[in-house]
Length: 471
Image 1 (cartoon, rainbow, N blue to C red):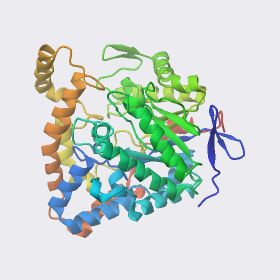
Image 2 (cartoon, rainbow, N blue to C red):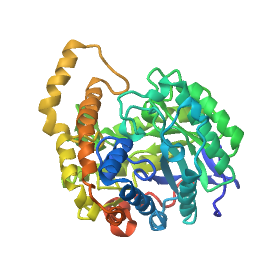
Image 3 (cartoon, rainbow, N blue to C red):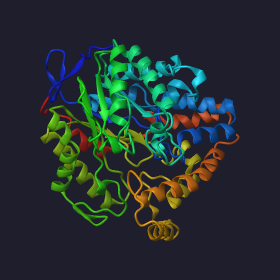
Image 4 (cartoon, rainbow, N blue to C red):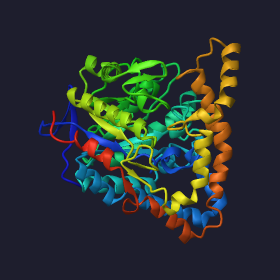
């Protein structure tokens, strides 16, 4: 498929088969094969969005939209652009439904990957490899939800994956099939089998990783495993024994880059943040790797941008500090995310595009109601949230739900579910009455040639894609 050499782990380093060290510097292509609300504009979750769109559009127009969306969102022009900036890797998030459909019932048998889903992965890997980019296959949404948030296509506030052995069995079988399919493909740097797990008790993750790794290794003994820490890639206390040829993946979102009304350097939510604090957080999140002598890979990080010049200046300064810290410590990394509607992407869908105009009303309502957790600003609905937060605090002073406490738990239920689910029906109605050709035309808005580029972000990141340790 390409001339990219096999990669392997040796101590603290990722090496080629010739023994040359490699730092993986990449970007996640979120929103394509695992859709997320802030990336493409829908409220709530991918599955609810798809259902609402199909009901409003009818199947012919729905199929035409998603055929074109899949073709347009990430293609050869996108890979060429990333390679031109100096990236050498793409982390590819995937929803299990792409590979297995919706059914995880016992009478369906083991969850084997469908040929149609594997063909899309082959296409993505091939496009990247042709441009000198490795691919890390990332199962971003697991049946039942490995965490309780939108990005695992979970419509609830519970991580049901850890509550049902059936879900775990099906994911093991799914990865056996994926590994068998890609076992002879060096352009795949490795497998990231569980994105941001959130095992509340911490007792299940380590044994599940051991079981999953054994199944993958039997099908494919050669590829690297990239294993996220618990609590969304920040806690490695539940990992257990270190596995061979494995990279442990931390996610390193800095609070001033994602919290509304933040300041950098300065105070965010009552805490002081400057470069030293950001570095100490990185060192804390990656302490497990240094203790075990394994490579450091930051699987996700990156600020969200608000459109406020003062706020965004601070966030670009934060990103520059993070990238400098990673370079100084010899860490590989994958920025989040490549393409979206303007919140984080290197490439953005233009607000005046046909798609942007079609959903403009819902986007405005989403912002007002803060139905997106990522990038949402709840200041316009604080008069609703604050009395409930205070009531829960008064009635249940010891209530501290995993993983982020009562305030975030309330926000998940009220903003993303109570407000987000009714709004997803409005989103679907944006597409009512479209012909298949009109629907496909909207999806073309996601093509590289139709999008804008965040030149400031691209220039900043390019400064850290040149020569350094491991090059």
